[in-house]
Length: 224
Image (cartoon, rainbow, N blue to C red):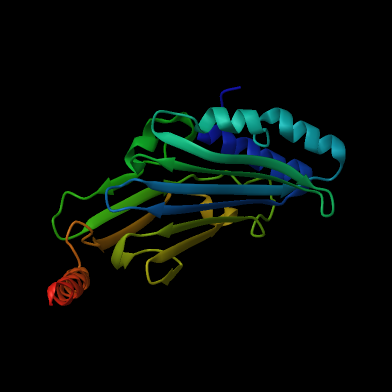
């Protein structure tokens, strides 16, 4: 079953409204200076009775084979996919983690269609990263403030501008309730990348110290 990201959102909303009213989504992404990185996705929801969990699984959102199929591409390398039910609190979970060659390349995948990942490192002084967030149609009079959508990004550099809700050094967190996602939203951050291509000064000192120790050792060894 082929599900693009918009369809995932609509199906998830349907499930949250008509089954239990409690859907949560979490995305944690670690970016590297070249635009590659790793993404972890976790979403979960409560179900009222066992029959509901079977319906959810058939829709593909909580089906391990379907998820693996949707996230497999020439741009990604999947590390794990896990779908399970927690009987103690009637919650079904989907988790997956994968590496990607460049975050811009994810725009070519159906599952990320419309998110418009943009990693712009054309400026020598700074890099700008943006990502759209899907709007959700929340009508029908339901209060969906208790439904949480979280995005966490670990940025490879010093952050100079952002629109995140929270920031801790290079960790940025955006939090939305579905009532906040009625219109178009985006994640935005400008940062000065770590200069990984330059050899750190401290490394030179370590190498020099090791060379000096080796020379001293050889000199003592050669003395009669």
